[in-house]
Image 1 (tube, one colour):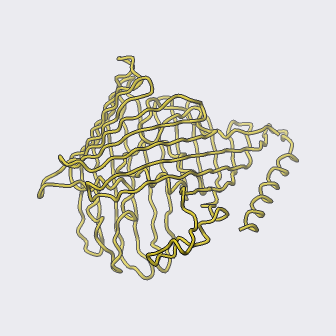
Image 2 (cartoon, rainbow, N blue to C red):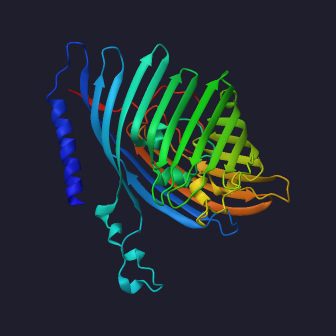
Image 3 (tube, rainbow, N blue to C red):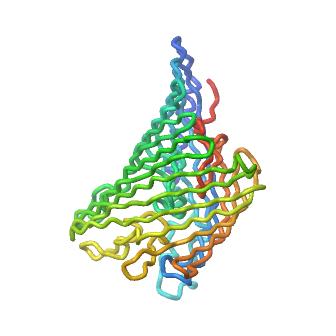
Length: 415
């Protein structure tokens, strides 16, 4: 590990030295030393004992993802970036314990891999191109890069809060276009390379949003997830999800910080090719949010069928599909009455003080209901610090209110 850290530091030093030695070219191109720092702490206490959708647990940890690199600004207006960084992540309290404490025969808590020097989760390395042309901001990102570069609006049926925290990076490609009243993105995340026991997995995702007026907006999000087999595990499962929605924003007419409604439809196509019986889960999702003085509530109501019908099914080797096939919140396994639809409701009360342009803090209490049954409670506190978030203050819990120009310009020093 020490050799590994020394190699990374040496590479970073070479990057900085090479930039400092360069001069602006006669064509107007200019090199900059670029840097970015992202910190997140997440406390999420989940008390789900009343339900069987998900187990009770406490997620409490932090991550730091610094990166440095080069910016090359073209005379024609585009900017090329090459960045290298590291993702350091720690679950609080996850440290080696003495052997005398272990009484159940489980020795995994003795592993030296839990020591501080082994918290380097993943290397990030990516290329990014940004161009402003007319009224459009065009962005292309390729490599291993932070998930926060995705700025589309995705329901929790797509990605759960725990996945966003633990799977912090995209491995693939992202293309985005930002207009004064619209935003579009499409990308590919390659999650698994074909191996002996490792499944080949990849996802193509997209999102679009456009403002029809100050009050009405239309949006669309979707993905195609290919969950293939491995050398020792045959079989392929297709999982596609589409979510069109209409948002009605009344905040401008009421003087409130937030007062909006969203009417959406979730339509899925899923097929386990081993049994070749395609299914079409579907549901309507209605949200309402009301807030002022940096506090408020958000309510999500889903009415429809089970969006995760293969969750408890097994592959040819007897492994349960579970959250390898479904990355959304497990509560979208809607409990239905007989063959009819059922509903799920999520109510969140939050407080999000305006502390700094670089810092966002959110404290909330979340109650879950399936049918008429109480399914559990969460207490959540998140703290996020990021140098590239000046113009985009959205949290992962809610939709942004206006289309914003590309805010991921990396701070840098001109050389």
